[in-house]
Length: 100
Image 1: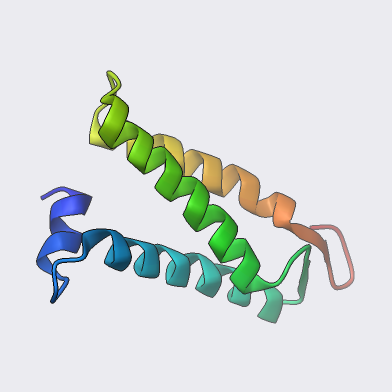
Image 2: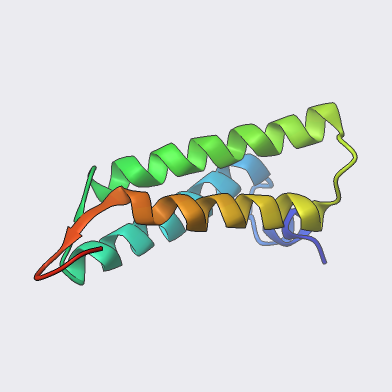
């Protein structure tokens, strides 16, 4: 089952984009909160980081739906995951007692 089908099936009112946005933002904010609790100094508040990444990912998802590039859903998800995991360390300034 695809990510988009999963979200659609688990949304009461069928507003897939709203559910996707909420789930994505919550997941990213939870990760940023965890980093802050581990002693990392974030360059922006967790909610701001979540909104930044969420809107970037939603924008690329919309592009994928509209433009229909020669890219599978798995490739899209891989690229998005790679970008988020590569950029997340840049959101950390320092860790208590050492480098990021």
